[in-house]
Length: 323
Image (cartoon, rainbow, N blue to C red; front, side, top):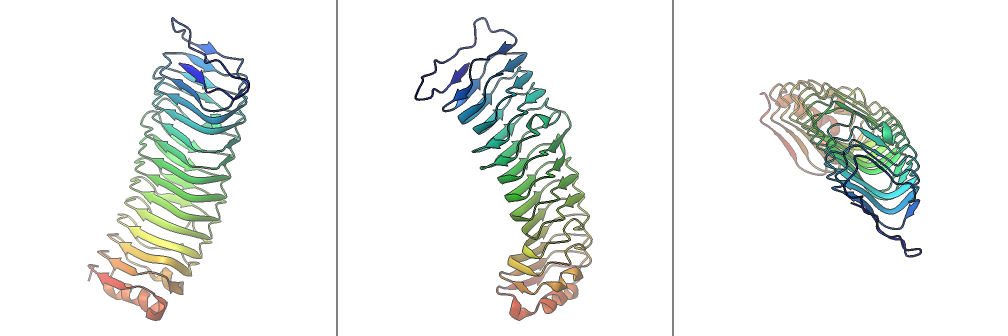
């Protein structure tokens, strides 16, 4: 059912999908919608096109159109949100003119979609982007023009192999988690983030954030992750590195000087060397160096001594390491 939420003036009459339901439908007389536009359980099996649509003040929703193969709104410039979920047969998404979303984007369970080229010109999202439950065809995530987003979450998606953000400069959080086949995360011009979270991404080997100066790094359960060469500019942030099976050193973090919360280095079985952190001059929280079976307690204590116990505001925990 295709129902545009009406603008106060003039009032738009709700539009219904014709009966019997056609395989494809083109609607070319909606230019602007004053609220949400919902396309839900339409029964369409081919293509749906909104050729004249330019703006929606509210959210553009597509939900449970399980057999819809293609959706296009090629002249849509801006919207108050975008939510596409459980449209499992959609292999084509064309929002080529969309540059700004004044709200959130949710893309969920679009298992036939081969790429996000239909969002190639998306530049600014004032809210969050969530990309999740992609388990179908191999999907490299590239948001080529995205400059600003509040939180980017890519989660629970075995189909995703790469997350590429070549234009992103501003984000509160970037979070990639439970994506078993993602190998590379690339944000080369991102300068600052509250957190960059990489969690339970079993195949992740490489992260590139060459311009990142200030950020929290939380890297957990990434068993193929090899190191921090992609962070040459990082001077201030937070540090939580845990349960990464192949990680042997923290080389690449030579520039880090100020830790604004705690340092956590725990459960990394292959980690043998943390000397690269000797340049840290202050820690605002605790220092935890625990359960790293190839790292000696002496190495851990040497890091505390290099920082200076007087420069660590919280407690120090060194235990359960190799010996």
